[in-house]
Image (cartoon, rainbow, N blue to C red; front, side, top):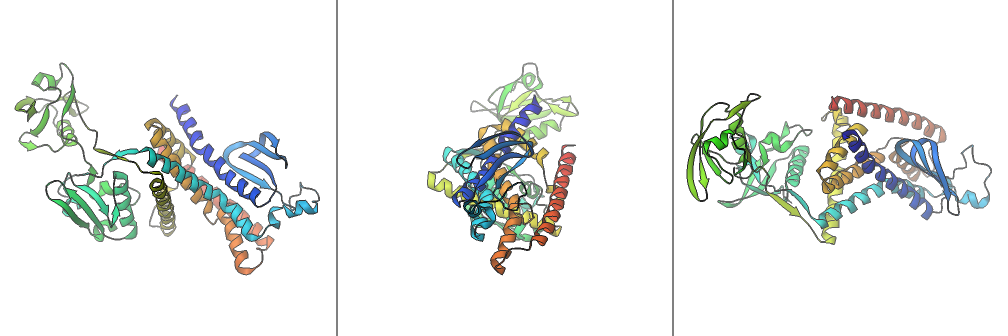
Length: 444
């Protein structure tokens, strides 16, 4: 059942993105007067088709479910007979270089526009995210040394406003990628606005593949430890703890939040713990002896762990602007990551394929519609970026050919184009094999 759920989520995530990508090519080709012979979802042998419209365009589903293509009129195709003068004018290669550039670029552009539309819709609807209020892990972390303290609300990083935890992480990641310091503006409950600095030297050695915030010692702020359900007969109930009790100290040590409470209990199996706190406005003190299970302490009580959240919502114009900025930010970050993989600064283990996409599709689908739509927007951007890579057989490779034509005034020689196509296929197969290998190793 879980496999079917993941497979369905994968198809729902990737299928429409491929269709939209190919529709971009199709729509612009029609606008430029090019005759489209076939619109296929999938590659390889056609398993179903229907001809529609005055040009009798064949709309098809092909055997291999990954990818798709738009086949346009091409006089070089041996399956096409002699063309009339009217048909020659509608051939793809008979168009100006600028029209060919527009047709090829329309696919990736359609993916970027779709991502903007999806994210703008989410911004207008309102997306609940953890707030950018931080929990500092310990005094031996970079975050503590920089002056950050538990409860600080981060409002900006290097001048860029921060409204949610995801934006905080992105701001720190950019600082690491830029090899720059991170100027963090915070709103501290006791003292107000402060500007703190994490030096570039502290960021330089961080692995961009990991959670940068976690490596600095930052976590999402958790609420104060307040007991929820207390199981009858468990250690908590036997000690006299009740629902609604707020825990202040354990063995005289202040407990900052629910995470610290759980960590302390788990580290103390069969050890008496003196807990003090507040119940209905009155102080109390009890002794709890956690039972042992899997070498960890348990008191059979639930502690509230839901972090503070904010709902990010905007009007239509602002939402579109934020979505466009987010898309551009993701595109540039992805390209920089690819550049760092080429230079060896980032591991090639980051190259992922269909198995990882399917796994994440299943996970995000279980988290709810908002998270799943956000994942679809990210994959749409990734699909657009991938197709713009200057690899022959991809859109980016064709755009590179046309750029040469613009600069030289003549098309790339056919012999060179054929050689580049073969090299491009080899490179693409190698990358796909690496992606599948990384997928398998990650799942194992």
